[in-house]
Image 1 (cartoon, helix red, strand yellow):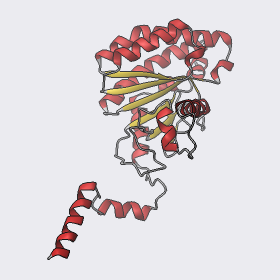
Image 2 (image 1 turned 120 degrees about the horizontal axis):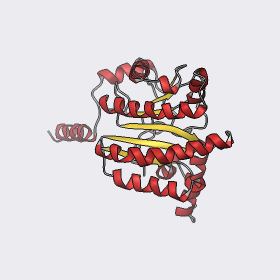
Image 3 (image 1 turned 90 degrees about the horizontal axis):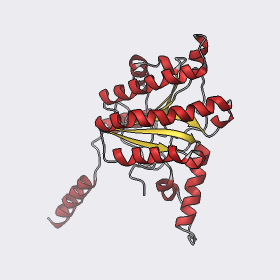
Image 4 (image 1 turned 135 degrees about the vertical axis):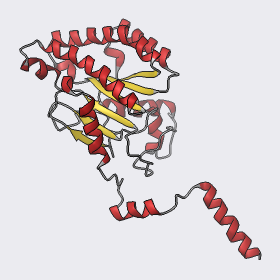
Length: 274
């Protein structure tokens, strides 16, 4: 079973600050075009924004940051741009992983890595192994990732693990096989660059995530822009299917825990015996 509850099964505990932020980093190419630069210049500048965003999340004590770096549909881009992005990924791993480890960051990659060069896959696995025990921030990069791919690969893995299962399976059975089973569902989803869609990103996990879209291009998305997104999140009323009145009742009502239930049962039994 997944270590983190599903928002469609139980109402999760929430806080003013998001625990998990997921970001589609859009607008690198347009940022470069506005400056009469090649698109690859925008991708290079985007790496600097990634560094700044990681730093801001650590300062704000965000536990999980997930970045959509390359979708399963991005292979449709011009070949020279795809080749550059793969090379940029390799260079970033070679240059940044040691720094991530020094700063206590756990690094993970999710996606279909069968299309990547063996050298790139080796770098990814080495980085994951090196940083596996770090707990300051879990940084996940989604590369050659698609939400539908994620659900299908989870179903296939579940079927292989339980080939003779006759009973009806539930989402709790599927959850451990999803690529991000180790993380809570995102509290806040951010997409930069002016588009208002989720583009096949974390389709399962975004069921009750708060969505935030901004016109700011990714290379210009600084700490102030992230704080603005977090501020918008904090103004949202997260109901998870409940009514606003129920939320107010839950705030004023003492939280029910197994220990309080046990104590109430003991008092009732005591009254019956008196």
